[in-house]
Amino acid sequence: MTVGIVIPAFRPDVERLSTFVRALADALPEPTVRVELDAPEPGTVAALGELPATVATSPERRGKGAAITAGFEAL
Image: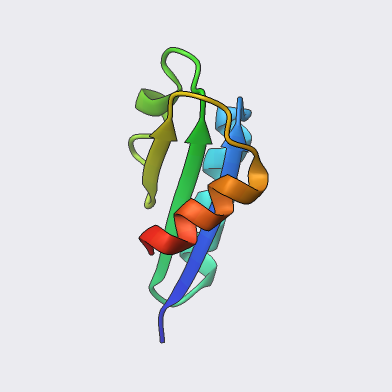
């Protein structure tokens, strides 16, 4: 069984998001985690690069609904 999870994020606390994504990856059997990051600040994408997740970015703020929709369409 595979689980797909989309996490919308706009200017997230990188440490908190990283902890959350790692906990999901540890708790679920073979999860597919995708972070939809809107208008990332400099360095945010690099800081999230080691996560067991796909990090997709948008140069502008789309809003939570649009980010979730894009993430599930990509999954």
